Amino acid sequence: MKALVLCGGSGSRLRPITHTMAKQLVPIANKPVLFYGLEAISDAGIQDVGIVVGETAVEIREAVGDGSRWGLNVTYVTQEEPLGLAHAVLVSEGFLGDDDFVMYLGDNLIKDGIAGFVDQFRFNKPNSEILLAHVSMPELFGVAELEGDKVVRLVEKPSEPASDLALVGVYMFDHNVMDAVKAIKPSNRGELEITDAIQWLIDQGLNVDPHVINGWWKDTGRLEDMLEANRIVLETLEPRIDGQVDGDSEIHGRVVVEEGASIINSTVRGPAIIGERTRVENSFIGPFTSVYFDVLITGSEVEHSIILENSAITGIPGRIEGSLIGQNVQVGRSSVKPSAFRFMLGDNSRVGIP
Image (cartoon, rainbow, N blue to C red; front, top):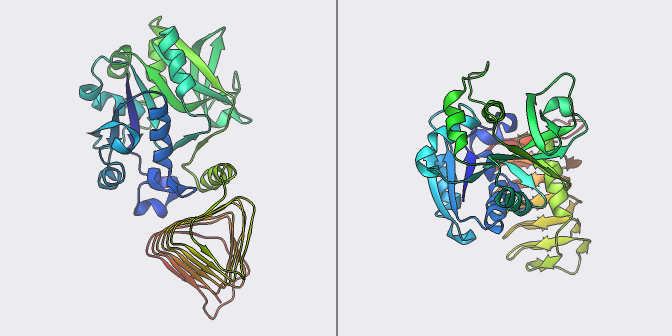
């Protein structure tokens, strides 16, 4: 069995961050989102992984390498244009051959991993299996209709959903899916939709099984979902102090201070993580905050936010919260006083605040 991980999207919902980095590499609790997926694939006993890459191919290759750190053998597949999930399967035919495979969207985060999902497919041997979750607003998702233990229909964002079971973004297929992606036509948005391919399998009388998860999952393609995923993962932290915390500082709750980091005359209230070689001085770091490596925070308060590497936040009189701040960003004081602070800043930005 193989895995196909999709990393070819442009990440338009996370711009301007994704103008300069792949959305799959934005860190959650100081680990790139993609790495959680690769760990889940390895834990499911799969070794051969194809990663479909597009315009961010260089970044993905540099971050993942050959996959050996997870015990994986990684092959890169180029998708020249993001023409749909089914198109990603089509361009991966040379890698997949006739093998069964799991398809995993690279910006998905699933609490309990996919081992149970993969094991069910191995045991029951359907032609396809789709991962589903109960959601409160199914009209915003692709929705599955079931009859007994089989999927009979998929509807994309239905106005009157027949169920509350949404497609999570992880799929199992046998070799028949290749016939499906070759048979379907582009949708109204010009893409080959994986939902159409699965519906084709159903219409041909092939078996598509559901697998409903009970734990949380997140598509981290939006700022709000990324911050929520960060919050959820931080709540699982095991406290650890590998850096330096001086006697004038206070650490409360689940806090990780990584090697080379320093906390000086500051308070860090967990769950929170402070990355390698980061310096926090005369500041407050509140719950649900991830600060990546080589960051400087002085005279400021940050809460429920993600701060990426090599950035600096200095002398901010109000609290920064609900924010995603990119790489090499400088946030400092200026002569004009705003009434509130909320940031989603691209790499190499500079913001002045009174």
